[in-house]
Structure formats: C-alpha cells, structure tokens
Length: 439
Image (cartoon, rainbow, N blue to C red; front, side, top):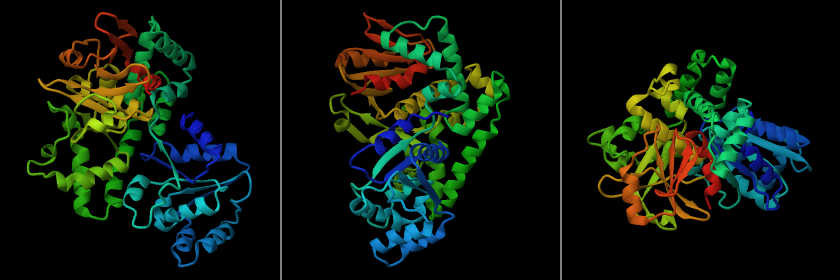
C-alpha cells in the first residue's frame, strides 16, 4: 500500500545534515512494512535487526566498552558494513536498549555518513521515560499515523475519484453525482479506520463489505490492552491507563466534551492520572486536542493547559470499542454517537496531515471544534457536523467576537461557499486537503 510518509523518508535520505532517523507511531500503523520497503527500494545494501531477537546487540551496548569499540564490534557482529556507501541499517524494537538509543549521539557526531533508521513498539513512551542520556538534537523524528482518507482511496484504486476531490477542493466546485460515491467511501473508512491490516480486509471484501471481518480490529484493540499490561511495570499505573482509555467514549459524549478526571472516578485527582495519560499520548493510542482561550497568533501561546479533549487515534478502533456493527456504520445510523465519531475522524485526518489539534471554548456554551492558522487568511475556525443539518449557534458567537475572514464547515454537504455567511463548505471526505490551507 502506498504511504505518504515514503516521500518524507526520501527527503531524509537526500538531506545533507544526516542524522539517525527515529520513526514513531501507534502500534500496527505500518511502520515496519514501510521502512522495509523504503530500505529495499532505495539502497543497494540493507540490513535489518530486531532487538527482541538480536539480544547480543543489546548485550554489546550495555557493556562498558568505548563507543568506538561498540561501533566497530557491531559491524562484525552483524557481518554488515553500514559505513559503506549506499547502505542502511534498520534497528527495529530499539526500545529494548536504552544504551543503544543513547549511543545514537555518537553515531551522528562521529559517523554522520551512516544511515540508520530506528523504530519500535511504544518507542515514544520509552523516549519520554529514558533513564540514559537522550541524544538531544542528534536524531530526526518522523511520526507515522494510520492511513488517512487519501491513502485509503489510493488503496482502493480510486485515483480518478481522488483527483476529482482535489480538483473540486482547489476550485471550490461541486462534486455533482460523484459526491455520493465519495461519501460511500467515507463511510467505509469509518468501518475499517486506517490500520493497514483492517483496510486490506475491507479490500478483500470488495463491494460486499457486510462480510467484513471485524476480528481484525478486535485483535488490534486486544493488542493495545495487552500492551498496557506488558509494557507498564507499575500495576497501579496500568489500571489508570486502562481506566482513561475506556472512559474516552464517555468523555467525548459529555456535554462539555472536555476531558474530565471525574468521569473516570468521582474521587479522581488530576495529579494521579497525569503520567497514565502521558503514557497513552506518547504511545500514540490517543490524540490530545488543546483548548485555546483567545484565537490569536500564535495559537499555542494562548492554550489553557488544564482544558483539553482526548480522541482515539483511529476511528475504526473507536467504532470497534463502541461495538458498532457493520450495518450501523454503513447506513450512518450511529445515533447519539454519530457526532463524536465524526469529530474523532476529523481529528485523525488533521493530525495525520501535520495539523496541531486545537479548539476554542467560549461563553454561553459556545465551542468551535478546531482552529487552524492559514497561510493567507489568519486563524480560521472549523465546525464539524455529522450530517447535512448545519445550524450552529457557536459559529455565530465566534463570528461576532472575532470576525474571521471565513469559516470552514465540515459535513456531508458538497463543496461550496456562502458569501453572506462566509462559510466554506468542505465534505467529510476532503478533510485531508485542509493541510493545503495551513501556513
């Protein structure tokens, strides 16, 4: 399957200031697959090691030998000269060796010609809680997410439809009869989400997606819960991590939508849950959307750190946690959960395309789902609707207070612009293109 991160990998390969590359992302989003493809296609000499299996490498770097000796012994141990031109070394499951992570600084400073890619399960958590010196400024990070809707359409061999969506977005023209076809694929995406194995299963079903095997997503959810047991040493923290994760559907459904510790436990104190929430964020199992008090540039300068929303990292996983069946999703019959599922989908699409998740909350229960800073029009509010019913008091309140150049409304409606209300309509299937507006 084509993944857009491949182009970022090419940019890294061709950079002059080469640093070891660390790829972070939620488990099972396709990191190992795309790294393998990149290394095999773009380099003449390629070696992969997995530290869960190559325990001698872990032992080597835990020794008291000098960095130079470890470096040279690694070549002998692997029978691979990664100093050679057109060669690359892929270290998978690098979280098993804090010593090797720390030594990446030496690799960069003394052997800047060497190309090394690192990945691993819950690597973000390991980097955030590293006991050894962290190689600050000596590595390059790339974040990988589940497949966005653009990659989903490519996987289904729908490039002509994708090109029409891009054309209509650019020209702000109606999709015409193709609008419903694009919405149909959007609902399929809600079913599978963006996990590659789940998408592959949906492709196998062809148009008979009522026979889609939900066990693919069930297994992913089960693996996530197992990680909470197997990769956390403190049983109390494990319990809190699970409690937070299981509470998210209720958190998003409450009237304020903001994350509330009292939803987990009426006696819960925020300080008790900060580390477990950080674990979920660093593992990329959740995505955090911060609240902006005043929508002015720079938006991050006006964030209220005590107020935020938390989304699941993949809408397909979210639907499986809710136990929504295939018919319910495809027929758009999710009732009270329809709104938060749609909002979660939009959050995933924005995040996967490099957009910081921010929202605004004002008085009179007014709230704007997302805020972006555009290249030409300053700060633009985004309102998300799960259907064609697009009335909104919050947009009116926001417009009266801040007078944005225009407003984005995401819904099941076709592309369009109302010059009187200054509302730009973007269909749900085109959210990934909002990146083209962002500065």
